Amino acid sequence: MDRHIEAIRDLFYEKILLYRELVENLKEERGFLAKAEIDALWKVSAKKQELVAAIEAAREKVLRILSGMSITHEMTVPTFSLSHVVSHMSGVERRLLRKPHLTLVGLKAQTRQLSAENKAFIEESLEFLDEIMGVIAGAGNSDGVYDDGGSVRANGPGSRLFCREV
Image 1 (cartoon, rainbow, N blue to C red):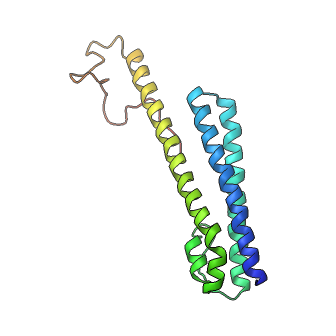
Image 2: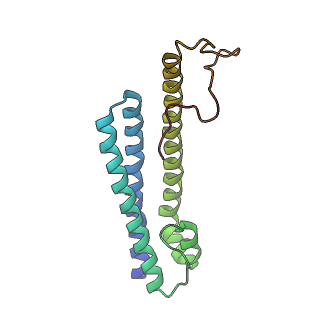
Image 3: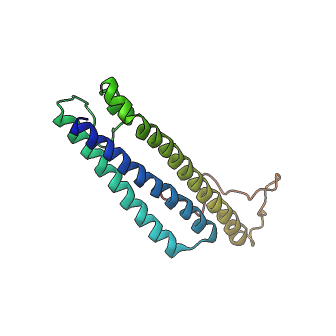
């Protein structure tokens, strides 16, 4: 096997380990979100940033190997695409990368799903807190706190008390 392809395969497997750890990290984050354990959330966030940096470093190494193989790929770390990398390989090389490539595709999809779920959970929690604070803050309001539909009355656009930072 060509040493370049072997190195790319090894980097794919390294990324698999990193993505698995990221998936576990996101699951752990969800638990801490539900319990509102702020200190633990800071630690999980720092670990998540480390994992993302390590994934980006592996991407950069793959791009360097492709350049060393004289393959014109026109990718950067932010525009990195596993499918694009595999598409530049011959049939034999592609077969060697097939299993780690498919595993990575699945892990990336799982990571996106868990991340979206955590963001939705945060958004819902902030909306709930916003409504509670609106009820408390508007308790002395003569116009009433609730509208005719049973929802907290908004005082105009952008009247939310809480919002998440992305």
